[in-house]
Length: 586
Image (cartoon, rainbow, N blue to C red; front, side):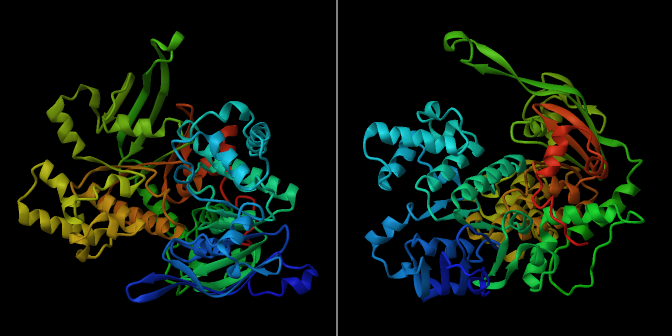
């Protein structure tokens, strides 16, 4: 733990002591500080979480421990004592012995950290050879199978021959966990190991990781931006902001009584914690949601946003449906899946889905990856044609529209996708990106389009100076605001948000969720909100459809689904919300 006399209290010798660590990056103007005066202590077998937004220095601190900083990065001061040995003084060769054998690493993105042209088995075997765990081919293969089995892959011997793209996200993460723990290290650094996974997969992965580290008495530094997840998985928490530690201590204490304004912002912005607070307040006498707006902290309180949404939804209870699905199915033909690799078989992505969305409200589609959520979005936007059933927008059957009528309809429906960096053209400026839909639909002249772009930028709280900039010059949150601005350019009635906040830090995520709520109230927008995270649903949605394997297994108001879930699958999704079992003291 940071800045506490843990050693004296426990009588143990610290496994890791970071003292006054300073890390900087070389630039034209000299050394730019990234980590400043960090002090952290980790005891044997302890799990410590480092929490903060992107750029706070948490990953840089962790990578400095094993000297895996990017080319321009360097340790400029302080000590990193591992079992009493200062790792900053080691040569490159000596450090290579420490990495893997004594300190393991589970990186954030498995697709970036597993080589796509090498089989999974080759990459695991490479680690085993590098750490000297086995030398003979048969022994290396045997140990590789053991590593994958320990990581939770039952058919490990068959999986060795497969490539990363043939694994699911959860399976790829298990491979990285297996590699990180393959040499039985005394310390494991887990850098955002599950940030891109479904909540249920995330829970299974972290449960397994916790089990493995407990069995081996391995200490772990767990890096995340979600305070709820950190409190659930770690005994102690360190909160970092702009390269410094601003608060540290026992996880529950920080969660229930945050002292620093930045920590208070994290607590207010975390959807998982906001969901718990809403649940507690709804169940309190009177059943009303109340947020504490007396704080002078510059933050976004998701409970306050949920309160505003709940009031607005009550006023819209009698509005007619804008979107209506009736027994909609989508069946794909999977080629080469018949006998001897010929022919095709049917795959039902959506099976008899029925729901409706009222004007000015938000319907959330929730479920794991592969449940059919995004297929429904494609069917609504007519990017795909349904196999059977009826899809009506404002009472018009979209399947009966000709190309010109469909073009006109799409003006009233706009999508916002998960990855703004992938959905924005890197060669087109922000101004031209937002004005492109106006040009395609022939709306206005050049001057009026420019005025509309500036108007929308103001609506999504972006400075007008961004008009001439390009996507790579913006932060993740700014890029997602640009994607929302582009969707609003045509003044649509319906916005389809497909995992629109899942790739963002909790603070940025909260800002975007709050922005969406404000725009809905101001412009009367109707949202179809697709996500795998029920915590986000609690603060943004009026009604929920829970999907599993192409079918809607539960559909009701948000409060009803959270307070009285009908199916075991919905209960499993609710239980997987980070921090769901933590007593918040509210």
